[in-house]
Image 1 (cartoon, rainbow, N blue to C red):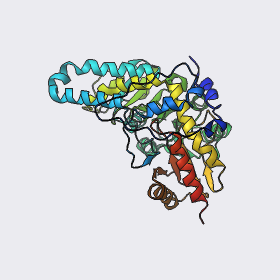
Image 2: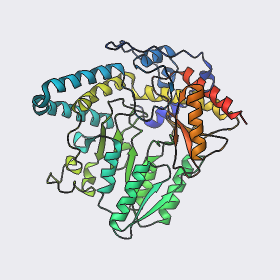
Image 3: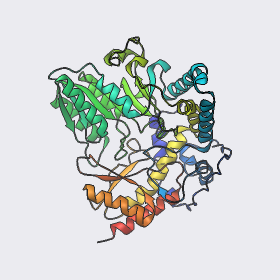
Image 4: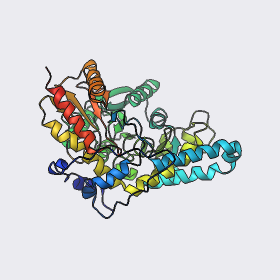
Length: 438
């Protein structure tokens, strides 16, 4: 099986010349209650498959998306493909028809199947993960129940980390009499620049005990070199919790390759499961570092005793295998290459447009589908909100503004599998016009 680095090098070969091919129109929606047969991807390499518009037109046709707007905000949550949506509706109907009889007799086996499939996709054992309702819940659990921080110690996070996770780190520090250290990810980001920032900040704070580290960033799309940063931290006696909410299903991901013992992932973003399902990973040998849920009498050697979410949506969990099946039909290497192709099809020309500041590097190891930009260097909240509003109201393109970056807010663009290159061309045209305005 090719390594992630091999895949990234291959995906990087999608050139600007290949982006000049004719742009097909959006695929029509699938009528309710029906599903087109899934096309076979053939034996093409990820690089070649990324440019096969006939194939991706068929994939886009598996999504029932509105034609009222060009939606380039695929990072909030992912649309369910038609086969997944139909499976979800069937599961929902079954649960509603059989109610508690089903929940107490058939559901446990279905839940185990979902857990086993998810663990296999992540490259870990089923008893090392447990489901949560979202990555925020999983990561707050890992952070706030971490027991390796004491008075005078330090916890650390970066400006690009998710606000709710930053808040949890501050809460952990306050609870245990620790202090908070922060760092800013350099702009423009490079691999060595990122590693240098973490190395310097860790060295400046030798009592650091826990580091929050985002894999695929939610603001600019930057992919951090997690394994290398984890090695820097580990050499200094620092434990790491990884926010991989945007990783699973966007880029090839095997949790053991990250090195870190604690990770939170979402399944309703890039995997395309129904909203309301995520997973918390605790490496088996690191289970003791996370306290059980307060008051829990569950086994100390079980991941399940570290989180308590109550009754989850039965139908949502039951639909996880269908979502994974759909992803597997495409293949994560092909999917990631296609998403990168869509990203490049707007970033490369926009980067050459005066007044458009692209924040995310083109290094194939540092970017996936998501990219952030500013117009004319404006990092103000009001300015970026205005850009989002103009794109929607004047050009019919939906994006979202993100805040918290050290150098100011930005606009995030996130294509999904239901997008086609024509959507990205519309964005480029809009940005050129907006950048040229006084």
